[in-house]
Structure formats: C-alpha cells, structure tokens
Image (cartoon, rainbow, N blue to C red; front, top):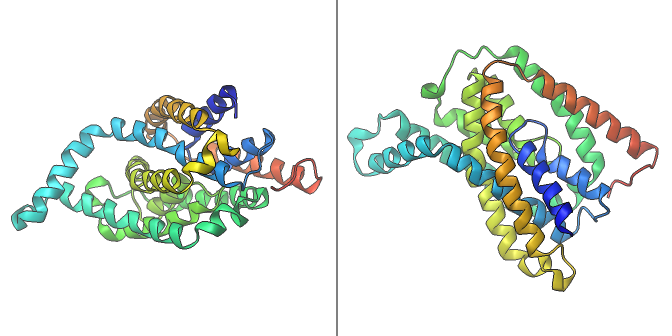
Length: 281
C-alpha cells in the first residue's frame, strides 16, 4: 500500500466511523476499488487497526466526561454509599454494554473476516438497516436523557451493536437506533455510541495487532506497518472533526440525510455487483 492510499483510507475511516453509514462498509468498498483482496488477513487487520485513530479522537473529545465517570465508578466499587452516583451507574452501563460484541466478535471472527466481507453483504446491510434507522427515528419519543441511562439500556444496545460486525450495518447506526427505541434522545444515544466504541474498537485493534503482526508486514507481502500507522494518524485527525460536527448536527437534525445516503450507496453497489462491474470479493 502506498502512502496516498493510506491517507485516503484513513480519511474515510475517520470521517465515517461515527456517522451511521458504516465505516467498515465504506473501507471495504474503497479497498476493493483500489484493487485489494478485501478478505485477505492483512486487509481485514488493517481495516480494524486504523479505527483506533478515530477512537483516540473520541477519548480526547470525551476526556472531561471520562475524567468524571472513571473516578466515580472506582469510588463506587469501594464505597457503597457512592453507588447512587449517576456517573457510577453510567460507568457500569458502558462496561456491560461492551461485553456482547467482544464475545460475538471472538466466537465468529473467521466468518466476520471472510464470508461477511462480501460486497453483497455490505450492499444488503446498507439498505436493510436504513429501514431500521428510519423506523427508530420516527418512533423515538426522546423523553429520556443521559441521567436516565441504565445497565439494561446499554446491555440491549450492546447486543444490537453486535450486528455491526456485518459491514454495512454501521456500529453507530446500530447503537443509535437501539438507543432511540429505548426512548433516549439523539444527543444521548450519540454520546453513548461514542462511549461504547472505545472498548469495542480498541479491543479489535489490540487483537489484530497481536495476531496479524507478521501478516501486515510488507516484508511478508502485507500492506505494511508504515501505511497502517499513517492511516491511523489520519483517521485520528479527521475523526476529531467528525465527532465534534456530528454532535452539533444531531442536536438539530434527524437521521434522514444518513438514511437517504445509505439507500443510494447500497442501491448503486447492488447494481454494480449485479452487472459484474465489480466482483463481490
């Protein structure tokens, strides 16, 4: 992989990671257009690892919230009287919500990295999940806010997040839709999606970095660690601006623009696949 391609892929990752349009779906499509074998071990590892750049941007963006929640959670572990603190309960909620995707990701890793990497799955997921998002956006009452989030909410959202292992569904699209159907407001479900992304994506990064270290190396025919690091840095920079913009946008708008975009992209991809303009893998 050359540096230009690394910058391009990193920028796409950073911009799409937190938008409900599927960053993995976009990366898979772009990697295919660039001529890569999208289910190759080095490409699937590269796709997972560069997400850590956007996650780091999220951690920095949410640093004040994290600096408040983590001490409250730790304090509640050792002092029963502090367990009524909203931040203590929110900390547990995020932890419990992060468990399902870790379990499912490990159990079905081979299927996720091979079968589900087909562009047919990407196109189908983009279209089908658009319907779920439209229903959630329409049905949401948004009467509940961040202080109302419970472990039951995040556990349900965490289970739904597992569907994001299918490229095209979108991790943020899955978590936001589930949150809206729990009657949480858009800003709360968006921030909650950010929080749930941290353990999920960092876990995937560590796993892929350790297990696929040699396969990524250019000496072994992989994409190379230099392009991987460059793409990660770019995803961090672009991700920082995307996170900041998304929270402001969601505070004033529905998800309709993202739903329309998903439907158009999925339909175009279906046509290209059906006419053999591009191969599914």
